Length: 124
Image (cartoon, rainbow, N blue to C red; front, side, top):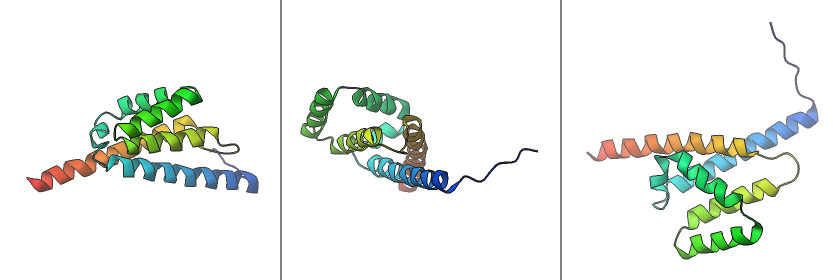
């Protein structure tokens, strides 16, 4: 039988902060998938994830140019997500790692896909 130790107070605070951050990021993804702009990205979250990762890996000048291009082309939801994810990446202290927001993206993508399927079924 395996026993686990309870985390100390510092670790508990860090875990609470990460859980809150995860929920916050997941809610932002869910809200973004409800927009007309990103509704189509729900079907293939991996391609959307790759697009986000490619944009986030750019240098600050290129990244800011990408944000400007997205906003110019009417893709504010994607630009807002990229801004949020970039801020998370640059946050010091305990914060979500890339694998965490990717998991939140996958989870919310599946939730949104289920939602849109039920909307389509209801409309028939």
